[in-house]
Image 1 (cartoon, rainbow, N blue to C red):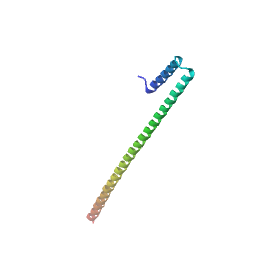
Image 2 (image 1 turned 180 degrees about the vertical axis):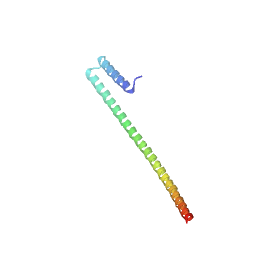
Image 3 (image 1 turned 60 degrees about the horizontal axis):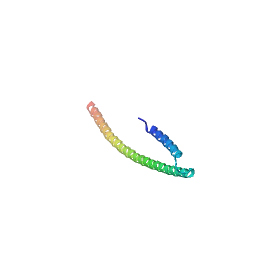
Image 4 (image 1 turned 135 degrees about the horizontal axis):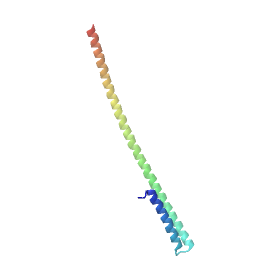
Amino acid sequence: MASSGDKLVYFLIGSFVGACVALLVAPQSGEQTRELLEDKARKGADRVGRRVREGRDALEEKGRELAGRASETLDRERASLRKKKEQLGVVLDAARRKYRGEEATQEESAD
């Protein structure tokens, strides 16, 4: 199966061949044919330009959306880490108090 790039190349080649055949059998004069081709080329360029702008706008919007999601995720993870840090601090404080209490108990029993 042909890739998208290959399909585009085939399309462009086919368009070129079709345009050449149309020029050879065209019932209009050369000037009329040139005007027709210029008009078609201008319309095609406008259409391509419009599609490019639409694509760029869509990509920018998607980028803003993804940046927002990443920011939200980062904020949630920071909050989660902050909470875990606080919990660890509480556990360490309790462990210190227990250690100091046992140390004091051992000193009293040694006396």
